[in-house]
Image 1: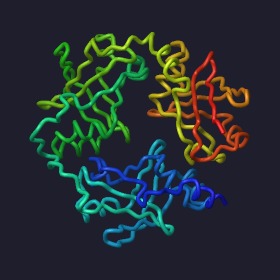
Image 2: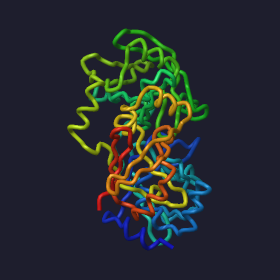
Image 3: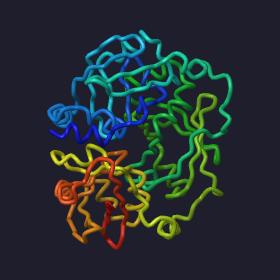
Length: 376
C-alpha cells in the first residue's frame, strides 16, 4: 500500500491547502455540486485515501467519503466524482448550500484530516459582492473577458470558441435572470444574441455548458472566415444590454508565423507541469497536458492533415523521445476537449524513470518528436 508515501509527498504547510471562491455553478441548487481543481484534489486529498479507494475512484470514477462541516460540526456521507480535469463533490451539497446560505464570492476552505474531508466557509471571509440579480455598476475593465485565440479556436472544421467557466459566470451569467440561468443548467445550452463590435454584425448563437468551460457555437465558423481570425489574435468579450459583445481589433494581432521562433528564443521547454497522482498511476497510465499549451506549442508545428486527423479521430500516433535517456517510443496523443492525454507507453515510462507526484516534467516539440524531460 502506497498511502504513507503519498502523505509524505503532499503534506501541506497551510492548514487549509485548498481554497476557492464559490462560483455560480457551485451554489446552483438545481444541479448541486462543488467543483474542485484536479491537481489540488490529487495533491491534498487522494494521497490520504487507501489504495482500494483510489482504485475504486479510477475504475468507477467516484468514491464515497466522509465530509465534515467544521463550522457546525455536521457530518455527511458524500461522493467525490472524477471529471477528467477536475473533481466534483456531490451528494448532500445542495443541502449544504441551502443550510449555510452559500453565495457567489464566498471562500470555501478544504483539507483532509483523520480520514475525513473537512470544509469551512466562515462568515467573516464572505466577500462583499452585489446580489446576482442586480449588477448596478460596470466592471472597471471595459472588456473583462480576454483570450488569445488558439489552434482549436480557429478550426473551421469544428468551429467553437471555448471560454473559461469562471469568466463566463462572473461576467456574463451574473447579468442573466434566474430563469435564464436555470434554462442553461437544465438544457446545457441556450440561445443568445452576439454582436461583433468591429463590424456591428449581429448573430444568433448558442452558449453551451461543458463542465469547467463554456462553448460559443452557431455562427463561429462564419465569424472565423469573415474576420480572417488566426492563432495569436486577442478576442475581447463583455455582456451589455442583453447581448454578448465581442471584438478582435487588428492592432492586437500577433503574426502566427513568428510564434514558433519567439517561443524557442524565450523558452526551450514551453510546457512544464508538476506530475499529479493520476499522471503516475500505473494502473491507468496516461499523462495529462493542458489543451492550450499543447495547441500553442505542439500542434502549431503540425501540418493541416495531421491536425485534421486529430480533430476527426480524437487521437493520433506521435513519436516521443525521452531527452534524459535518449529512448524513443511510439505513443498516442488523445484529445479530451480542454486537455490532451499522452498514452501508450506511459506506464513503462513511469516505472522506468521511477516517476513520482510532484516531479516536474518538461515537454516540447522538436523535429517531428514530442520530447520530454524529468530532470533529477
